[in-house]
Image (tube, rainbow, N blue to C red; front, side, top):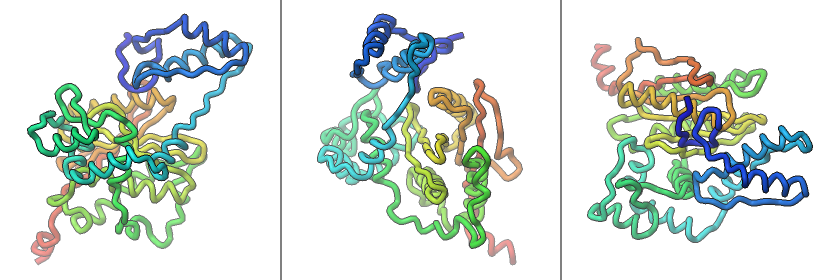
Length: 329
């Protein structure tokens, strides 16, 4: 049974899709005559779906062999770290003035009602950072959201010295077909458990702290293995993804905070849909939970909608060091 897709390209066999047959036919003629074509349309208007369908038609036609090339990540890296754009710099500057609010907006799974009576929203709305979307405050320009996620990354990570031992040569994080993401996530879970309250004062942590912690850890490993990481912001409140490009392959890690079982299970299905839209076979689901105990199932491999989803639950409820001392007595 087909359904409405809200993330990534549409597959007509699975999703309700406007096929645009006339536009594809005209585009086929342009390609056959060696002409270029460009599609201009708003976000989520079907641009990527159109090109996927056009490539399928060209493949079936048999006269040409289409090839997909994307410069998105190269361009994105430039805009996130190098591009001196006055408009983007102004957005970042204004957002920094309300950083606590912005972190809640970026990472919370609860919508923040839009009202100009809220001084933070009024300030950010006046400077073009947030908009009113279905009654909630939101950042509607994806590039702004990605740039803000990058801008709010901790400039100095004092935890890198605790990530690996002196004997770690990173070979455990490689396998025949590329990266062993599961091994990296298991190493992260062990690191969090080892450091506990000493590194993560859970009573004082800011919004987004766990997302940035995992991002920093993953980036540390991937850089040393010759790859790159990007923070992605797919549709769906409370979701952030880490996109990994390494050794010619793409990997997606989705992160969330555990609130309840229904929200947790919904996240798996969202990830499977996102993985499918990217043409991948597997995805990784990292969930931070203060509600799970050591006897609960913390790792799981599942096949969801034909995609392998590996779930890793990170326990984030720690005892204060003083309590541990009292118990020793």
